[in-house]
Length: 251
Image (cartoon, rainbow, N blue to C red; front, side):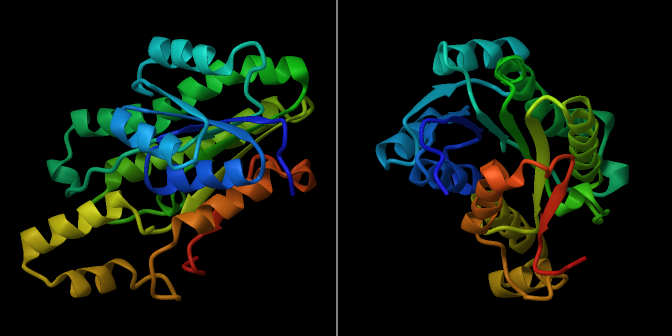
């Protein structure tokens, strides 16, 4: 498969799953721009050849997203947009106040809405495009102690399903990729927090984290990137409104 001549945007593209997606799209021939808040990580991604250029902005800020994407896209616009930026906060529901829920909705849901808003008009005009949200298995089922995050990722799945219906005859497809626990900085930080709070060894904490995955392991970022490549390819024209689970058969 080749994506030669196509322009792709990846939010949160400086590290982890976002960087793996950017690198995979680049290898497939796309010209990739990465977006995020961490300028050093974005610069490193470009220096390593994972992307062609970058811009810094907060995906929660509609105006700054629009300006950054307009500067990166130029007259050509983007053919592919992957909304990958996200965050998780953990804690029991009774210690998760409304502000935590708002934070999770802002980064995970609004952080998907804003880049989609910015790129979709050009896609509709050209009658082609791929919108892909990196959600989570938490967008399909509940997990204890992440109610705010799970609620936000459920909202992302609802957005994907609804927008896919609106764009079904436009040449634009809208899908989600939903990994389980992946081998990323976010999960590493989670393991650090678990060991600090409980005194468990890192090995024991990791085993507890992946116990629901029948394969008993973390998902590799490159496996998520491979799913994104499929959804960007010409053979996926009829695939829209879907949520592709990358979870080792968990459910």
